[in-house]
Image 1 (cartoon, rainbow, N blue to C red):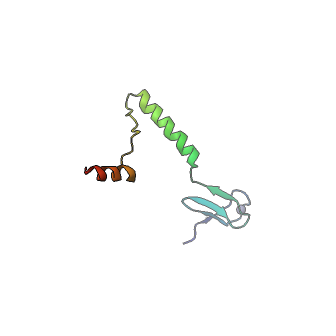
Image 2 (tube, rainbow, N blue to C red):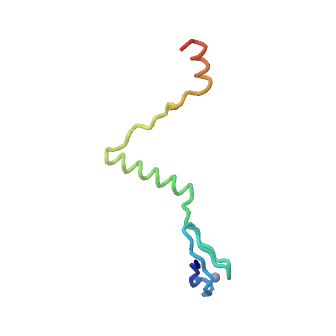
Length: 80
Ligand SMILES: [Zn+2]
């Protein structure tokens, strides 16, 4: 199924609109709909701030959840 539309740059009916990006085969006009990792990072920080202001923040866990191989090895030596 074709989903070609009118290109906003060259006006030709060769603009393909997709979920993650759109492009024009005629003039190579391109639109990217992915967020950048940097933008996502700052959005996440902003969300954390908002949660903090609302008193809904939780402590960020600094401790590793999974034991490292070294720790597991030491525990094995101790017979734990
Ligand atoms: Zn075009």
